[in-house]
Amino acid sequence: MTNPFPLVTIIIPTYNRAELVVHAVESALNQTYPNKEIVVVDDGSTDGTREVIAAFQEVTYIWKKNGRQASARNTGLVVSRGKYITTLDSDDVWQPDFLEESINKMEADQLDFVFSNWESTNAKGERYSEMANKKSLYSYFHEAPHTENNWVTLPYSDLRRLFLNGCLAPSSALVFRKSSLVAPWNESIRVADDWEFQIGLIVSKPLKVAFNKDIKWTKNTVGDNVFESLDYSQMVDIVMIRDLNLILSLHQDKYTEAEKTQIIHTQASYCFWSAYFQLKRGNVFKVVQLLMYSYRLDSSITREKLFRVYNLIFLYRSLKRGLKRLWK
Image (cartoon, rainbow, N blue to C red):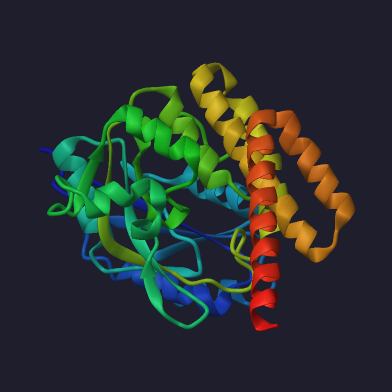
């Protein structure tokens, strides 16, 4: 007889977050979905994480030498027994029905993976929906026929286009079918391992995927977040250049020419605006380096943006001169 509640493995990687990981574990334990195993992978913590997790008898605890987040997730994957796999970052928390809604949808429609909307907190302490504010997903939140449905099933062509344009599903958002797995998390990726993992799934074979527009978890931004701790120039250098170059090389035979052009176009745009960011800092050497790299990637988009910025500067200076004349 088929189990109406297939087992879900929850992998929680953590490193020196003894105070925060407690909340992540509690949110996993408090899920309304009844059949789950929780595996906390301690990536070499030195802050008493072992003692904190020992208080939770329902949790499997694994300590390993520090190897970053992808390595920790893979350690949990090796021991996982679930039909479905999900990972919860140690500074995030799920709403109680996160798993129940995800698994019900996957079972009903026989999906390969799902992901859910989340909320973040800005500098003013205001909470806002991440996905509803993404330009690429605007139509799914604000245009018919999607406005009355909390679940959106993505056509495969849309799925490829959206995920090659950026990471739509941070690790804590994703639940996937273990049998759909094509490769573990790539440990050579420094920051964007979740993005590479999802792209690897998507470009390897046609998938059935849906996302939940309702907010089902909270991302807590702390000082040592792998991604959020980076400033814009660091994000471009590490994620959009280093990691994305590796993502391109890992799956180069599975992209169409149009998709390769799309990725390179995205890289060039980020490099250009990073150069502008460095210009405001007065870092001329870095400006020249980034502009040259942007030009090598996509000369047409670089020229276009240079022309646009030049026009904006010219307009600004003209307006400034005009206002000075008015005040005289």
